[in-house]
Picture (cartoon, rainbow, N blue to C red):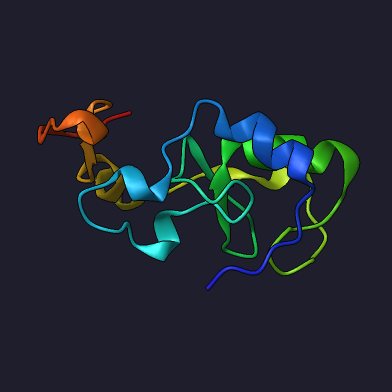
Amino acid sequence: MHHCNNPQGLILLVQMAKYEVDRFESPPDPDLVCCICQCVLDKPLQSPCQHVFCKVCIETWLTNRKNCPNCRKSLRISKLKPVIPIVRNMINRLIIRCDNYSHGCIEGVKLEY
């Protein structure tokens, strides 16, 4: 389980274009969920301390802080790296419900980046 303390403003800012976990047919693996916005990873970046975040989330976080939001170790933007391909593949296999699910649509599509 992820443990992050995050200001509400940051969460609202980054959730506008994100996929919330309840949009998926099956709950996504917790390792595929950003601890900052609580949504499925978008353009994920990995820290040297092995934590993964959405690109926009972690870059926004690090504009005012110099530590990992998960473990609090020192962290700089320059130390972030793209995730290994298997993580992106796992995200791409997730099935997201149609935007009209609440109106009865049962279609699902793969989430592809």
